[in-house]
Length: 452
Image (cartoon, rainbow, N blue to C red; front, side):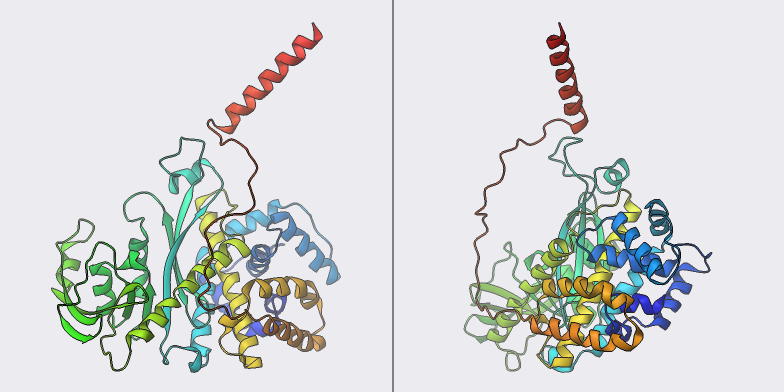
C-alpha cells in the first residue's frame, strides 16, 4: 500500500514521503485500526488522487479503487461511495496536516542552497477566501457575508498560508471564518508566526505592516520586508539618511489594542529601528538595515517576488479547484483543505526533483498546471506498472515536467477585466427552495387552466 501511494504520483516521491514515514505517521496519528475495504493509507491515497483529478467527485475515487483491486486480481467490491465517504470521516485530520507540512519541510531541507536568496529561506505570506456548500453546520462555523440575505449566500472560510519562495511549497497554513473576533488575516498570521525560524525572511503586502506583527517577527530573529501601510507617512528628511529616499527611522510602540493581553504587550519593544526606502513607486519597510549589504534596488527586486504567492494561491484555487470546496460539514472542510495542500506539496516535490535532475534552476521556472496535467496523464500507468519499468517511466515523467518551462515575461501587466460576456441571469433574491415552490405552483395553475 505504501508503495502504491508513492507510485501513484511518481516513484520519485518516495524520497519525500517514504514508506517508513507514512507508516509511522499513520500509527502515531491514527492509532491501531481494523482492516477494512478503505484503510487509512488507501483512503489517504484516494483522497489525494481525488483532489488532483479533474473530476473531484467521490464516485470517481471509488471507481479508481475498484480499478486498482481488479488490476491486482481481487474482487471489484461495491461501487457505492458511502463506505469511502465514511472512511474519509474516520481519517485523522492531524495525519493529513502532518504529512502536508512534512513534505514542505523536507523540500526546504533538501533543496540546493543556490535556489535561496543569498542562502536564506524567504517565506511569502498572503491570504485568500474559500467558499463551500450552504449547509446549516457550515453556516454556523463559517458565516456568509453579512451583506447577503439568509439563504442567498455561501459560507466563507479564510485561509492564510506561508509559502517558500524557492520551491513554492505550502509550509504552514491556518484557516478560520471570515467574520468574528480573531478571524482576520493578521490574527491567523499571528497564530502561524510561532512556526517561523530564526534567519527566515518574511515578504508580505502592506496589510501585515502593523507595529506588533513586525515587532513579534523581529523578536524571533525573522527579518521582514513589507510595503508601507497607507495610513503611515514616511518623511525622508528625518532619521538616519542612507541614500536618496533611503533612511532608518524609529517606530514607537502604540497603545495596547483590545485583542492583546497585558503580558504580551509588556514584551513588545518600546520602539523599533526600521529601514524605509522609496523605489519603483513603493515605500518598502524592512529590518534589513545595512544598505551596504542590501541595496534599495535589491529590496525592490526581492519584494517583486511577492507576487508569486498570488500565482500559487491562484493555482491552488483554480488548477486544483480548491476555491469551491465540496464537503458539507466543518470538520470535513478542514480535512479537504489539508488534503488539497498535501497534494499541492506533492506536486511541488515532483517539480523540484525534475528541476534538480535536469539542472534547470529553481522549480519556480516550471509550470505547475502542466505538472498536474502530466501527473494525471501518467497516473494509471504508473500505479499499475511493474517495478522493473517504474524507473524508466518516472524518468519520462520528470523529463516531461522539466520541459514545461514558463516563458520569461519581466514586468508583465494585465488589466483586471473580462472580455467574454457572462450570461444574463438575475441574482437570486429569495432562497432557491421558495422560488422552486413558486415555479411549481405556477406550473400547476397553468395545467389546471388548460384542462378546464
